[in-house]
Length: 254
Image (tube, rainbow, N blue to C red; front, side):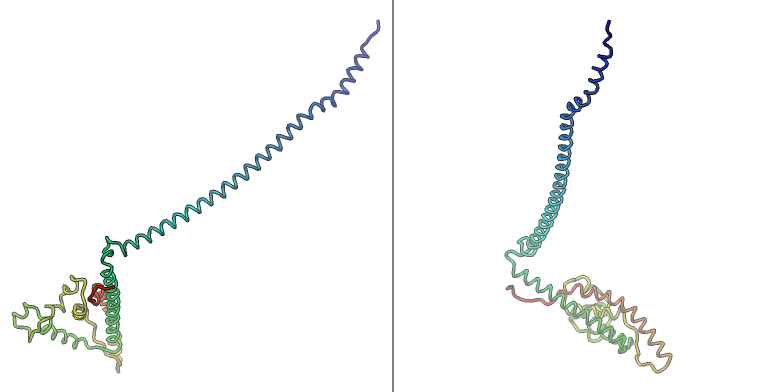
């Protein structure tokens, strides 16, 4: 009996030798599909990155447009409110444009008058501290005004006043009511307030051009005290000029 084992072994060997190419041919379609999937995935990833950048750009643009729109809206609202306040009927303009124009002119006059008064007070104190001044003489003048111009009714009844003149505020040199209670006044109240200032916070005696060491020390001490009092006087001057109403104009034409 013939044995066929070697023949079968050779066939099996041939089959084994021919199987790798056959299998490789069967794997080519799978490689192609995998490669296509890989390229497709890369395309999708790139598209998503591009879309993300575009969305970010659009987001920044929208935010900038919203911010600009908000600023423009606020600016328009402020302009509208300012125009309504200046020219609206409910604020007194409308049918009274000439009156409002007159009021604005009076406000400017008041500011100019207050600035002039402030400069006058400052210049007067500077002249006193640099050029010299006698506090006793100033006090004597204040007493003389009290007995004539500022004599109160109760003082007139006692006979203390000498030739009291009508027209002045009673005790105006020591009473702040004429210019503190009424906050829309003119030159007369300012002059009364100036006399009140000299009585309440008088400057010390200043003697310039000292000839001795003692006089020099007195001058330094007087100017130092005057500088301290000037601070208090400046505060009162601010209150005084803050109530000035300016010059009153007649007429209603703009």
